[in-house]
Image 1 (tube, rainbow, N blue to C red):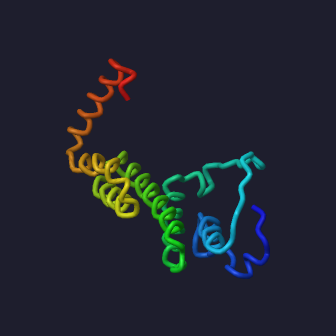
Image 2 (cartoon, one colour):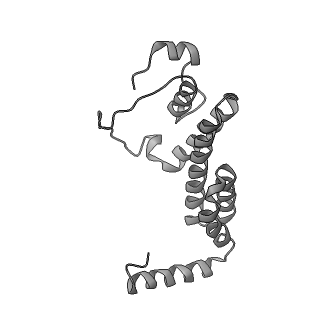
Image 3 (cartoon, helix red, strand yellow):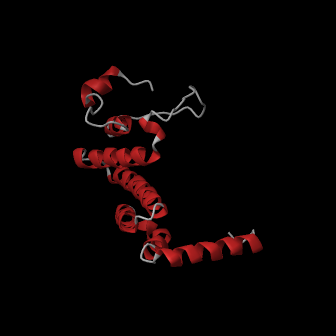
Length: 160
């Protein structure tokens, strides 16, 4: 990132209370008033190890949600299109949180995140509704559905 010093003077530095995704929160604040440009080419190589918080996708997801929510609460004058983009991303992040909880068998937490996903981005209702319904099924029903789906895919690989 290359950022003008004036941006830091105007918007402050990274939020030190955040252990991760503080860059997302800062950049979102800056982008409320400034324009940005991207380069569609890799400029650096990043290595991650198991010791990095960035290797923990669950934690990164939670901090991304925190960063986006902070921006929404701090920047009350955000234009509606910008708010909509942030809410859409919040919906995506909550869905991933719900999906992870669902896979781990934490159905209450999964439902909570799926509902937050739809609340953040109502366009997600159609795709999230089956997950919400499935989160009420007992584990043996989910296992049976998974087996049936696996057999369906094996017998007709073009059906998915």
